[in-house]
Structure formats: structure tokens, C-alpha cells
Image 1 (cartoon, one colour):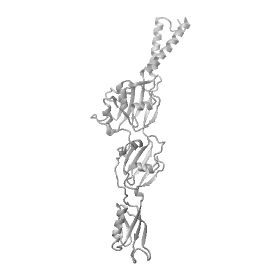
Image 2 (cartoon, one colour; image 1 turned 180 degrees about the vertical axis):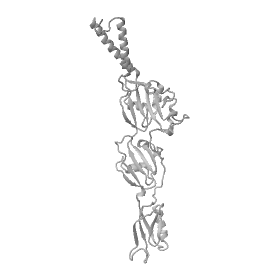
Image 3 (tube, helix red, strand yellow; image 1 turned 90 degrees about the vertical axis):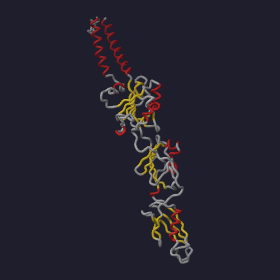
Length: 381
């Protein structure tokens, strides 16, 4: 008998093996790990009534997946294309006009003796689009250019002042401006110098986009609609230089879209989108790559939740709201698919733990236990 009390014969070895099996079974259930194994996450895949859908991402199905409804986006992202407006402005309610009436008649109704003109300053365009003038009452000028308004006023004055000449200066009101909020050198309200004033004109007048913003995005608020585009896309595509309308509001902010990185990767954190679109392969890179000693390159999972209205039992969209996309980065097909498959805002990218890591830990425990037993036998002998 050895000092361990287990004996050195066959029966002692059997008792030792039984103990090892019990220890290893307990250890395998409670091994410390940094992430789940793929089979654990997908354990409902073959269930009779799974609560989520599992889709393997391949080169063949990436184009179809790209047509599914986007998730995690907010607002209307169909940015209006550019168009051309007139180089002149039109008069709107709230604008003010200065009117100078030149009259050479000696007995003019508007001028004082010895004067050749009468000046009427700061006449506001009322809610009906009209201005009041002496002797002619109201003149509707809303929607006219300054030139058109001058001609109309002169026409209305003709019956009482046949030789009168009218000069008109327009001062645009609050309804003739656009607001730019944040993210520029000089935020504020900017008057529309013409009907051909565009987004890039506004950014230039407002001092440009602040250089320290992460992938800055432009949001255009127009009535009840919201449009959004990145600055980089706006600058690279002239067709996106949208025409501005009175009362538009332009907001410049850094990109707040993000995905969550978890598991056997270099980074476990909330990762912001550094550009407009991020592929699965780029996401793995942003996560600091997969751990050489822990990660399962066949088990990169993307967890996504779709809105209820996106669910499509016919196959033109997800069959369930919650979907797990699996990527195998050990094959050319999987790598090419990962280069095309796009991450959506609020996705979770999980690098699962390799089952080999657990096996290595178990083998280490076996070695440690056997080493202790060998030492015990040596001492007993």
C-alpha cells in the first residue's frame, strides 16, 4: 500500500482512474472560459420550435441577404438628389422691403415740396402676402422676385403718379433662412441668397465641418421628414448636393452607429462605425482580430434583431425577428462571404471559443493529476 491509501496494484489504478474521471467530468463543466462555444449558442438550431433563426453566410446567399430589410437604422436615408433653382429669391411672408418712389411732378401726392422722392422703409409682408402702400392700399407681392414686386408696385401707382419710378430693396425674414446646428465652425441661421442655395454652399458659409468628428454625418430636417448622409459620401458624389428650401434645418454630428464585440477577440466593447458601411471581415479586424489560442475561426457569429414588420415567411426576408448568422473564416468561400456581408447598427459580433481550448485545459488537468499520483507513488516506494 502506498501512502496515498489507494494501493499500487490493479485495483488501486482502477480506483485512481475512477477518481480522475469524476474530477475531469466536474472540471469540464466548470472550466473558466472567456466565451461560449458555437454549439452552445446554437443549441436550439435543430429544436422542434426554435426561438431564433440560424443562417450560414456563404458567397451564394450574400446577395439575397443584402436585399433584406435593414435593422438598427433610424430616419429616412434616401437623401434627395441635387437640382437647380433660380439665381433670384422670391418674397415670402415676414420679409421686409424698403421702397423709394421717385416722382418729378411738382404737386406729387407722396413727395414734399422741393423733394423728388419719397422713402418708405421696413414694410413687412403680412400673412396674406401683401404690403400696404399709401393711396393704393394693399399690394400682393408674395412669391414674386424683387424685380417683379417693383414692377407691380409701380403699375399700381401709375393711375395716381403717372411719372413715378419705384426702387425696391428686399430684406429677407426668418422664413427665408436655413438653420445649421452643431458640427461646423459657425452654426446659426443663414439667409437663402437665392433659390439655388445648396448643402455644400451652406457648409462653406458655416465654416466647414469640424475635423475632429468621427465619420461626420449630415441630417436634413425638412418638415416631418428626416434625411441623412455621410459627409464623405456627400463630397464624393455631386448628385447628392441637395438644394435647400426655406426653413430647412441641417444638423452635423459624428457617427453614433455601433456594434457590440464579444468573445475570443482582441477587444470586447462597443465599436463605432468608422465609415458608412462595415463588413463582417472588417468588423473582426476592428475587434482586434481573433485570439490565436482561444477563438474558433469556424464560429464567428453575428446576432441581429429585425423589426417585426421585416419578418417574411415567404423567404424574401428573415423568418424570425432574431437571427444568428454564422461565418466560417477557415475557407475561401467563408472569407469572401465575410468580405461582402455587411454589419448593421446594433449587431452583436461574437467570436466563439474553440472546443480545442477546453480539451487542452482538460488534458492539462489530467497531466497535473497524473503527475501528483506519480509523485505519490515515488514517495511510497
